[in-house]
Image 1 (cartoon, rainbow, N blue to C red):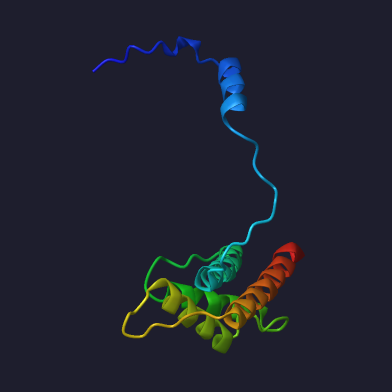
Image 2 (image 1 turned 120 degrees about the vertical axis):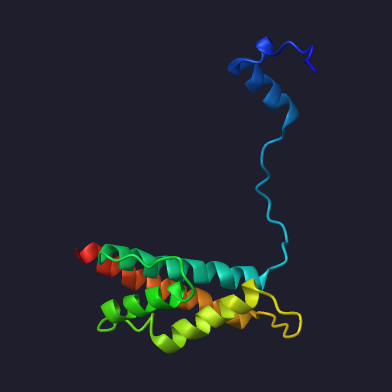
Length: 140
């Protein structure tokens, strides 16, 4: 089916003029948004793990996408940074990994809701880990 609309009039200038007429600017006023603690926890974990992955790559290694890959990456990061930081220490890394697993792969037989305290802990640990990785990567 062929359209009878003449699209030749839609150049950049025309689009900008129409866009300005039809769309209001983005609002900057604060709004109340419910906090999704599980999503915040998982996002902090992703930052934490990505920091470990960056360090692993900088060391010249690559952790394959395999079961246990996240654990391997944090173990390597811990080995590389243990003299200057305990951010990737096995106990914390495992607690973080398990917490992310609970959020990411919901089990109705074992529902676990993340709390503000869980999220605060996750963000603090991810922040410390990224700072340690940044220090190590900038050192050379």
